[in-house]
Length: 284
Image (cartoon, rainbow, N blue to C red; front, top):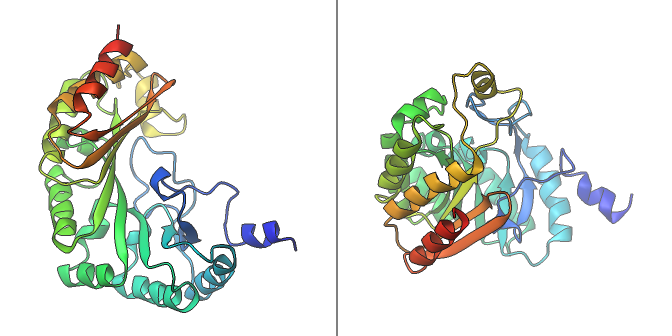
């Protein structure tokens, strides 16, 4: 086998889904699919949920160590790898210590309920073992939207989970889906999401634009005229209201979907006015 074939053998698919801020991290596949897999808008998690046996993970990390001998950060692949128990995560981190001791920092995707199911002591143990960041799709801070989209958590639970991460020092990167409330709940989505995040301390807020996937319940609602899908310009206007109401500090704000053409990036609150002016210009 060539080196390329050996490296590819540790991944289940050709495309590796890893957050933009983790592109330089060494990617270790530990799971496939989403443990929830019930969100009405989601077509991302196509695989059946599955946690790899420890033997498979050990084989993967052994090979990975040959290709990433200098990476200081390890990213555990899986739509919400943090669903694994503290015990299993510690076993994986023990393998990290054995095969990649130079990768002192660890990050992964998580759902909010994955965090809530762990005790404060377990979160501290994982932090002490190197867990430094979780990437979480909160999507909205509006309970009506969260409930309708079958997200499986409430705004209070989101706030509580992030508060507990703050207590132990685990950073969190959040994604929000603009347009998720449709025209009917657009203003509520923007204001309530900002209100929730203002009570948290995200390292990064990444705004995504809602995409309707044909095989999802939300797409069927759209075709039936139940869900009132917004245009890209309307979604940008909604995002501007969201940003106007944000008061978070030391947070990188990113939008890579504005009108399908532009990328807006800036630290908050320093660049807030510049970002708002850019959105206003694009909406002319």
